[in-house]
Image (cartoon, rainbow, N blue to C red; front, side, top):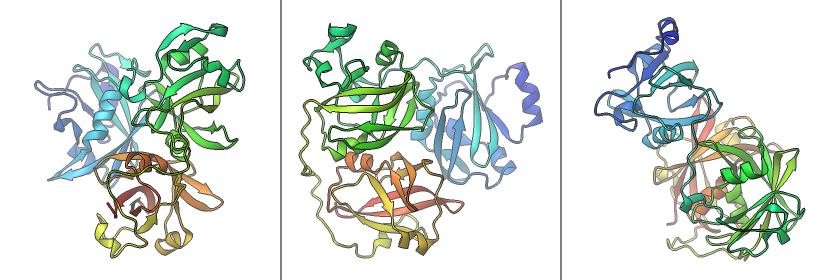
Length: 391
């Protein structure tokens, strides 16, 4: 691969640490999503043997990070296409950009992005609004009381607010509701501020309950993970509308109070079109495993599936260890995709938050059974591979 010359200040650094650093730039005929751009250089693999076996984590100067899973192909190690493409898209990489990777220990790399003129990018690139059919909130229509804008399909949304002075926005659910996104116009309008990435917040529900969520940033766009848990518990479905009221500490969002407008909150689950049957147990569950040596357990879904709990007997049987409370992990799905989750500890019991998003996306319902296979990194659970049994 033809490499562009790094800025002068980088040449010394590269000489000092060339065994733990590498750069990527495009050659004629390539684009950032070409397969060749996903290769981990052989010299890096030789210089830091066994530093990373299954994944790498990229961090950038503005503190965003990406986890990329790895796969072997002949004598090369590649980053998974979906993960690399997400990194490329999130950073709006241009054809004349240069990336400089520096190994920071174990699976971690610092990534620095340089433009054609040698200028380093040190803040998040100009954000791209999410597609309207994925995370669309509302379209402003006419002005209403208090200087706020009203919306075409909710009459007088302010009447739902617990505190009429609180900022708010309206949300109509789409097919995918893994995270609750807050659009840039809403952030700017109320001058909202948010907690650090992965810090805790809460969803406050109409029945007086609250559910934990986490602050996330996707391409500079603020969002709250854990929204899928709310949608599942209250049977919110595509087309339902809610008013989301922000609770603040100063200007920092600490909670989102959710008001149901056109929600259908039936306690009964919806029928799946995939025709699964229910099973009380799994015959020969080992046949589902990707790696027969991996630890696993069986799970039959109940009415409430906000968290995927791991029972003490399973932990004891395999001697499992888990990451810190609220640390990131992944659910690996049968279609090859993955969804982010978080390790949780409840009074000494371990579980994975984000399970509700998996159940929602794949229309899992009470009575469905799955086999959960643990993927380990140095003995610590880093992912749960989910196998559908009765489908």
